Length: 532
Image (cartoon, rainbow, N blue to C red; front, side, top):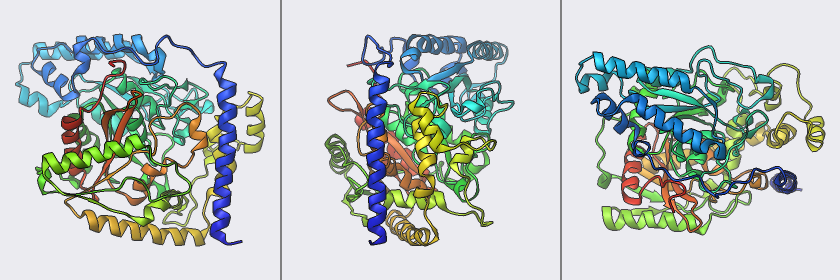
């Protein structure tokens, strides 16, 4: 039997197993799923919750709004709807109010002008939430792993420290998938997060708690991480903005698990937010000295850019077909750019995009410069202590006795099957290099590529088990090392968020961020859940 055919059979079998597990999961958990009186979270009524982080900071610096009033407004909103979405899993309300009052006192006593204050504290008094996988002093840092339930951060992750130094006030930490390796945010410590646009649907992962928290207006800016789409998928499913920066720009230090070796360069920490104007200022702060690698000060004239688009991956047998709603939304963007902006948008067919999953696996299978193998997921599940036995954990899960989630158990079981040998790695590494060359030459320093954020809108809970490879629509750009911004494009007829990925050449993040602001103005950006 031909090797490629054998691989296809194995992967299709994995999908079949996932489908059966998904059906069992839905049936078993349907009886214990919470029931809510509404399908969505309640709409926002407090005007302070409808301002961007940039706008809030300006009003606080101008002393037109008290910081304590902003923080209290967000606390009230969290108390109102977080029980429905389970986005924030640990609060620090008293500490946040104390920090807010200290800012108000500082402003009352200090008569520094607004420009000086903005330079010192660009996010003065702005509420912030942080993915639980990042260290936030005094808060848990388990990444949903039961054996780390009592791991409390003694310091802040680098990006968290930078945002706090910029004046932001953390309200709490947000949910994630177990060990940040699945695209539904659920674990055995905090439970499952729900989509504010439809509580029976997923929030994405692994930064899913952050995504639904922002979308439900329980926060205005947030911190996420992305090694396969963990910023962009939650941003897409929850109708907000999320940016995966160019590799090596934003420091990753202070999160668990931490990518090591060859995989370290593909893990990206980045901003998530409801309003596009917050993306660039957040990136400036979070990058620290790394911001010098980018060109955020360059003025972008969108009419001078080259635009390209592609509506699907070319027909991979592993991925779902792209929803017609998403194709139509993308075509509306193309038509708008051509008729209103007056640019030409070229339709392209990048044939090697259909190998997106294989290229991501190649990235995750790569050895480090020292020749060491990447850290095994099964070792991470054991937190580098007593190793777990995946088959035994599966049996325990079927009996309701495992402390691990079924996606984690499944990945541990199939890890060696999914890992490529040297021959396959060499083969797909050549494909990756070819695709990278094709894309970077096409984009240059003035090109934008429009591509689906995911083949479907937010699926119902457990459905990802039946479509485990769909994340490759985002994962491919980690493998290629390109900057990407996920942009919301309104809601479909069922009230679920639509969106699109905006991709640029290496270190041209300023281009994707400029397009994000344009699309927000043209298509409305974030839409408040429960409004319609």
